[in-house]
Image 1 (cartoon, one colour):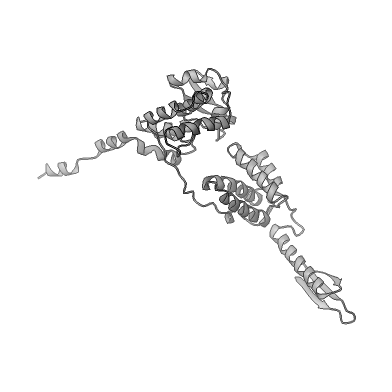
Image 2: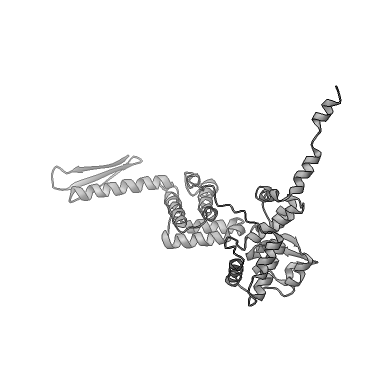
Length: 332
């Protein structure tokens, strides 16, 4: 199996002979260079076809086809934003890329490009996961390729985990620092502080989300794609009487940035209001399982970062420890 290049003895031409699966064919060229270039090209194409499982058995599928099937057959609500951004990057930088080694290389190029843009490792990993999932399904479930390739696209462990927590007093100072012209945005940010709800989830709130002093987020409104219930403290009730908020992501960001600059905390982000909400609940003794459900985390692993904020927890443990030394002393 393979390609050979030789010169015809009876004339000044060169022949490329190929043998694949027992079948032979040949092609004639005027020069040795043309013949060798053709042989190299066909050999590379043959190896690519074998790698992709094309040799008379499988049709090459594009990444676009894979994304369409992924969206049609699986729950990807939590990945929606990343899927759209990956699709855009591929369309602009690797249009028509096929699923297989070609997609693997495109994924690696995207990974480097996103890193060069300064995106966080967590964000890069979320984008790469879209490519990995298409590669995985293409091999394990759709039978589109013959080799598992998803494991070759690695996701480095993020080293950018943030631990920014503000006290109740600091939160109050931040709120007061919002310029008066941002009245709606002030309500928006205060509600984020009081509920720990994500910015995107707050932006889609409507009157139908409010029931008996609670915010009930519907599956299509949450990052996880699952419904979530958050109780409203008395201070938050006036904030939800006129939904939806007549603002935008950019206006909220502008109001928040001006406030944080005014109090000298340029490191604080709006998303940190979720951390502060959870940290304050933990400091008041709320169970981590409750905090997990309120924030919409998938597991306690993520929520456990707030355990440090509950000093009463350790006092409770201390009170339960046995008095081993004293018990031994009474026996002698």
